[in-house]
Length: 401
Image (cartoon, rainbow, N blue to C red):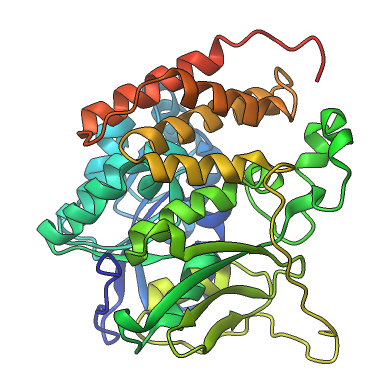
């Protein structure tokens, strides 16, 4: 549990915030939290890859010192999108710009919500620079868990979870001895296809995969929920956040998404954290930690809460979860290969180039074909990521599922 800080910034001063991935689902919900507490946050940095129109509107409202965008073309488009009366703002570009934005001296707290592997470098830089990092980008720890946790130790940075499941575990662990922890239990909604017959999975459309029953999320993470790869990535993330071996991390499907996760202890007690499916609550907790700030987020309606169901996942029906456990057991570059292959396969699925069943097939093929390096450097992880993506991009279009 060493990677998770037990310290917070002073509540008496505004928290100077860099929001990486400001225009996505987590980013926009983070700014909703900021709006609730205008005196407690000073937004210094906003970043996006290419949604420059939304970024320009955010700059007009929150007036940061700096922005970062994905390319020179996006930078030019952003400048054109800014209203005439917008504040002066420094514009950074690309990965280097994102890393500079995450390590600025006028930033206390970095919320990392960049999607995918692209989030690793700036988060590494932020924790090395001693920042408090609220981490919503699970791929950072999936790919580079050993590097990130070492950087936290070396740089004195702090890592706080934003994912609802890991936030729940973090809250359940508060005040508990590490030696007393027996098992972490991550809950999963099961996504839109939990009750759907497996023999119909070949007919699943993009629209069906994006229709999540409980959560409102970005396209990639929503598809990951449908395949249950999202839960597999969270298992890997939990290993690094809480320093718990893989055989003490289990998953239970909980369709209501009310119990966000649980911790079982050596004396037989189990703690659970409950709440409505609303990402603003864990976002706020990560940003306000160690305090809890009163807010008007939706409450549980006990009159409506008639039952809570739990069921073990079917690893044959949802092989992505099994593949994630396998990659974590293999270690080294295996989780990076898993993540990159999945990102590439999901991208092709969203573009209509691969079927739903081709996502786990592509990931398994990459894990079988590419060698695993046991103690990778950052360059090794980048190379593994690149090669895994290349293998998936070269897969032929399916004739059938």
